[in-house]
Image (cartoon, rainbow, N blue to C red; front, side, top):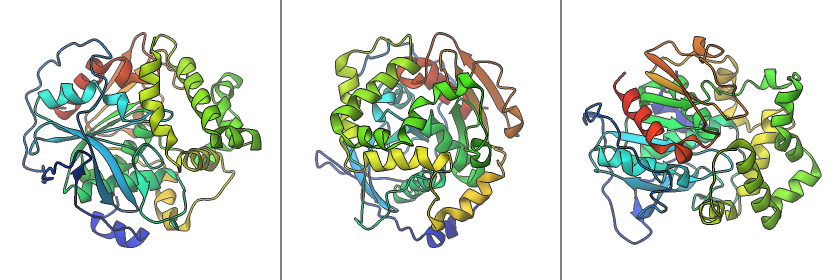
Length: 352
């Protein structure tokens, strides 16, 4: 466990506390430690795609970043932070957020570093994306918004980020919803070959390791086409339209997008070393720390990266109250493909 009072000093981060919407409206950001969870009611069933936009976006200086985020729900409600993956953005939660807000939750959906309106405060900050760096971004965001504790829910990069915070800063996490289970990267294990079918699923990771892949990510048109193709592969039953994809693809125009994505995937497989400021955290994560906070893990049955099952392959990592759920006929982008199911999991995790 890392003491929250010392992490900023250790990695040289600072926070700013002004949260201002892009429309110019100010919202008071208050601590939610005293807020009580809404009753464990059933989440209303909605058709995916019922909502298409967030009412407003806000910006706040937090750590190394000026973080862009959506916020819905009462200012003093218990907090849920929803974390997106790659190649996605906050619109993965465009239906989930209002469902939770209507139940009384204060829902925060941030753009991760390199995405959307999230930008680095300094041009001199290295555009790195170690797993601990992204987790520290979210801790800094919580500090900037004066959020002591929240339910964390995510998929893909978002699951990894939430898992790390739950493992290293459990006092900041009330409960956890982690799609694909325990996904803290074990870089040592990544050095070993996997089964051919597994290696095939990760084709873009190997592509990004090449100069051709780097050029594709750095060319905006090629990047947009590549990310759309990934959507079709990892969510085979999701019949999204052009407008849905284009809303998310706007987040890929961030000037740091290519650098962040390339760094993350190259770092995972040991092609590049991380920044020394994060060594302390990465050494802790290399031990694959357990997670003791109340947790629900989700396996989308059509997600090619994690074979759907009973979660037994990672069950040992979760030592607190725990449930596992397999979601039939759903692919990788679970919150956008099945928002009611995802929102219900958040409510249920909050009451484990």
